Image (tube, rainbow, N blue to C red):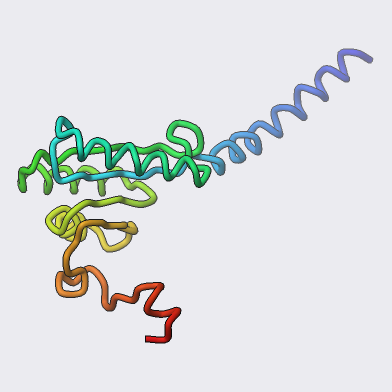
Length: 143
């Protein structure tokens, strides 16, 4: 009798392994790629990334916990920025955080399917990154 119970338990466990594997895959960490235009050694730019990571953590997104964040530094070199943009897009992150117009343009040349969140872009409409620009304050005031 014990042998049959053991075989039944083992068989049932083997049947549920694929389901357990599927559940683990469904809970994969989200991936955010960050591409900064400058050098990591410049303290003020490094502190911007630290501030970004802290803000994400306050929203419940902790690097290494439920999100993987990969930060890349362009070193102010347009060729390096374009190479990194291609590598980032090839890695297929869930979203990309970009700094500056040249970085955003390099990323947009590589993808139109991965969302790009950008900062420090003087004219996003003129650069073709967005079709229109609306501020929450202007919208709430009825402008």
